Image 1 (cartoon, rainbow, N blue to C red):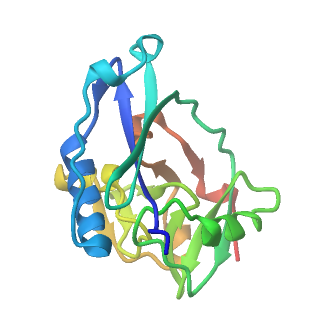
Image 2 (cartoon, rainbow, N blue to C red):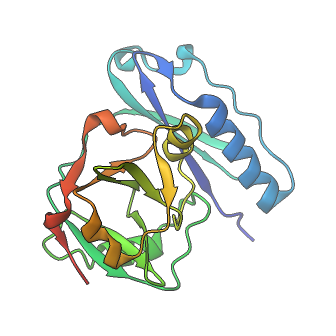
Length: 201
């Protein structure tokens, strides 16, 4: 029986790996949960192709009970001008698996939106590839009801930049903007849309 495959996506900027200890910790938690053992991951600048040592690069680590591959590619930010709310009360993406079939199925329902914002049991969770942060006059808030515990989300919470909040889909109107964040996307990158640009349920 084939082992399930998982991934870590790590930001590399000008040859520097970002939040590497957090990524390694999540990799180990996932591997121990599924396989009882954790592979050793050692990354260094010498592994990065010389042409990719300047600028923002995505490092993709694929693993099971062992490291399967480490790949590097230039990163390009996605265009985002609208999100479509979709509902799925059974969706589960607790672990960053290679198999994204459930997310891909929901993504196919985005209609004219650039991405989806998933609602589970009435609560706002994530988009198809990012955690979200809502903004209003009181501050920046990320839903407690996330699907995947993202590394950037964890970093921003640990540093007091954002706060957790229970956000149901009816609460969205209390905010002005929604930002997308993940290992590759910082708040400062301003990949965001106005709440008025959300296509509601």
